[in-house]
Length: 130
Ligand code: HEM
Image (cartoon, rainbow, N blue to C red; front, top):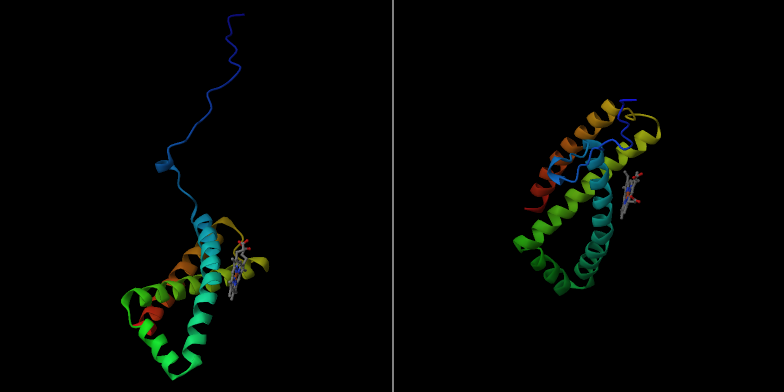
């Protein structure tokens, strides 16, 4: 008596996308999958370019002139950066399969390390391309 029984409590509702923050490990994970898909399509592009360059002397000239443009170099740099991240993140995944970096803190720290290593490799890829 005298008690008001509230059947349904107001539940927290959060549809404001601006306030939702993904954990770093989740970002590392989705980037790894995206990098894998980019790598998949890159194989086709790079094999085509290799085939062109090996087809004949003029094919080689054609392939090198394609690579002269800034836009193509930028794409190639992006491809190499995605590949670098996929390999670095992939090695992290494989280490996790061996039970390393599986805790919240070590998972976050190793994700940060994988980003830093990728950034370094990305700079080196830029030096290689330009
Ligand atoms: C041509 C080369 C490669 C392609 C096209 C490729 C593509 C992919 C794709 C699309 C995925 C996502 C699968 C999914 O999330 O369901 C994936 C996952 C994975 N890749 Fe690669 N990959 C390549 C090379 C490598 C290399 C060299 C490594 C070594 C470090 C690697 C390690 C991994 C691992 C460990 C996963 C699973 C990640 C997970 O459990 O979520 N990959 N790969």
